Length: 289
Image (cartoon, rainbow, N blue to C red):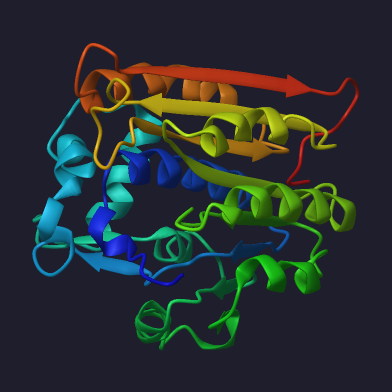
């Protein structure tokens, strides 16, 4: 099924959560001179126009990045994310929103590498166009990121962020993310894996976190941002979650600071809330070394 286009949802509350966390993980890896890889299994088009086309149909960015755009009281980690979005809007007007690969490109250094996958034929063409000047550091394939991931792990530098953000248009995606993460950990146990999923009133979505907690990672972090009560969101999505295997040191503390702010400013009704869970095996070292 290839009807999903992320442009309809670009910049919404779910993008704010997933891309803010993505940026914190990338900043962590970039603290050391050692190279790392960024692997994106569902890269999308890379960048999205907010003032034309699909994004205008539902204007979901108005429930997300737009609510943070002009604020002067952002917590510093959140301000870092908003400032990065500002860099692709140099005239100060919110017209473009960076997808996960474009956001990563703003952080990666000369020694780092990107591996991007996108199956939708139209978005794959746009992705190639958006990264046409990036050279050999960026490899893009119009293929299934779940399948391609097996051949990439472990990456040569033994440091990587694997970002998994499927559309869940096909309910098999819920099963496939658990399988992909389990196989990934067998090949590359110390990698950082970040998975986004929607909060929907359906068993596949509700049961996913419990399945992810059973994976043999050294540590995991699970955070959800609910912006409204069940049945109130569009289309039935009341929020979303991020599940991070082998999260970077300090991410939990950062989220404890930022999540109440996001609830206050992205929440749509009295049911807005967040959940933050964390588990670590005794004696393990944090990734990114």
